Length: 166
Image 1 (cartoon, rainbow, N blue to C red):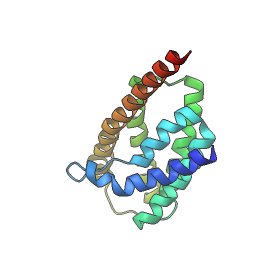
Image 2 (image 1 turned 30 degrees about the vertical axis):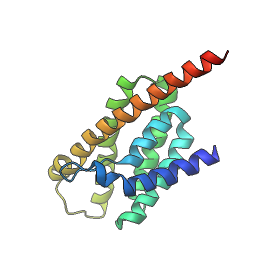
Image 3 (image 1 turned 120 degrees about the vertical axis):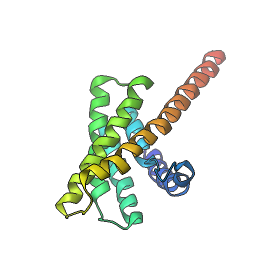
Image 4 (image 1 turned 60 degrees about the vertical axis):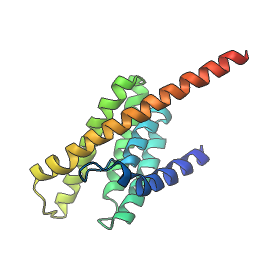
């Protein structure tokens, strides 16, 4: 599990730093670490989601040059919350995971905005929602759908190969 945790954190951070500009549409970039945190928290549970969210968010905070800890806190809470909900609700269908990803991206953006308001962040709520949070949520939804469908396809292929060996 430690190897998966390190690979998830480092791989997600490197992918966010290098691949995110490739997926930019009109200046809107997906939050790859958040996608990774949500999808893995559903599969691995709340502790994994919380730890992964905190460390990944902390790396994003350090790389972004803003307030250290804002993304770490919001991503840790989202990771823990979706891990708990995933264990209780058995959310394994892609048609549930992708809209959940969009809703959680909006929730994380709102939580981050609320934390930044404590420190007198100067942007108005409407502009942040219209030009940052909602476009990023849609972008995360499209990227998340591709990832979820790719994972489902990989599991189906793996099931065929494992079933053929028996």
